[in-house]
Amino acid sequence: MAHTVIPPDDPKYPAIKRHIFVSWLKTLTGYGLMGLLIFLALWGFGFTYEFKLSFGLVWMLLPVVMWWFSAKVALTMTKSVPADPNNPEHRRLIEIVDRVYAKSGLKFKPPVYISDNPLPNAFATGPIHRKAVVAATQGLFKAGMTDDEIEAIFAHELAHVKNYDVAVNSFLSVLSMIFFMITDAGVRMVMGSLSWFKKRLGMNPERKGFFTGILEWVIMFIIFRITGYLTRVIQMFVVRSRESLADGSGAMMTGKPCDLSMALQKLVAYVEQHRPKGREKELYRAIRPIMTVDPIFDQLAEDKAETLWQRIVRWWKYLQLTHPPVSERVAMLDRMNGGTCPRLPRD
Image (tube, rainbow, N blue to C red):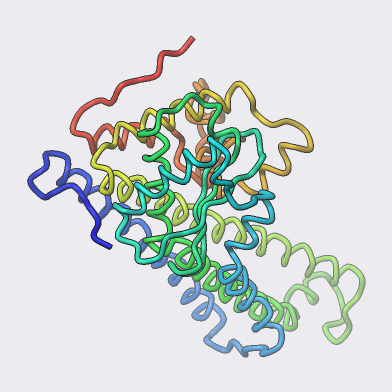
C-alpha cells in the first residue's frame, strides 16, 4: 500500500530526519556499551569462560520467547479484547488506526484491541510486522484529545512496529544475559581461588568455613548489584532512544509534530490527576514499558531539586526511566516542528 510522508522540501523534514538519525545513534551507542561490557568481562577473566549449555540456553532463550509472544503477553496483561465496530468509540479508533496505517508503509494492517483500563494509554507491539497488534484503553477517550491527536499517538505506536523496537530491545536483553553468564562464571572461578583472603583471615585455604562462605556471598552480591545496575541503565538508555525514535518516525508519518506534543500534554495532565496508588501502582510498574506516558515517574521532569543530593537522586532515577519525560519529548517535538508547539494551559 502506498504511504505518505512529509516531502524533503517540507521545512520540518530536516529537523525530523536529524532527530531520527540521533535516536538511531543513541541505540547503536547503547549496543556498543553492552558489547563493551561483554568484552571487558571476558578480558577481565582471561577469556576463560566456559558456556554452560543448559543454564545458558534457558536465560538466553527467555528474551527470545518474550519477543515472539510479545503481542499475546501485552494483550493478556492489559486484558484487551478485539474492538467492536458497532461501538461508536471503538469504531472511531478503528477509523483513526486505518488512517495512520495508510501513512505508515506497513504491508500488514494490525488488528485493533480495546482494554477497559481507566488510565489513558495506547500501545502497538508484536515480534514482526505480520504479527503486530495495536490497542487503546477506555481511558484514552477520556483525556479530551482530538482525532488528530489520537492519530499522532498511533503514528508513534505504529512506528514502534515499523522500527522493530520489540526485537531491538529483546536482543539487547540477550546480550545482557550473556554478560551476566560470563560474570557469574568468572566470579565463581575467582571465588574458588580466594586463598589470599583465606590466608589473610587466618583460615585454612583447603577448607571453606562459614565466614569464608559469607565473605564470598557478600562479594558476589556487591558485584552483581553493580553489574545489574550497569546493564539496566544501558537497557533503559536504549529503550528511551526507541521511544524518542518513535516520536520522530510518527512525526514523519503525519507531518505534524505538534499534534503529538499536545496529545502528550493532555495525557500527562490526566495522569497527574489520576495517578495510580497502592496495589494499582505496582501493576502499572510492571506494564510501564508499553505505556504512552509513564504513569508513575513522569513527574520527575517537573521536580525542582534544590540540593546536589536531590539532583543526583533525580538523575539516577532518570537513568532508569522507560520513557523520556514528557517535558523532554515536547521540547524535542518543538525542535522537529521548527518552532514552539502550543502549550496546554495549566491550572
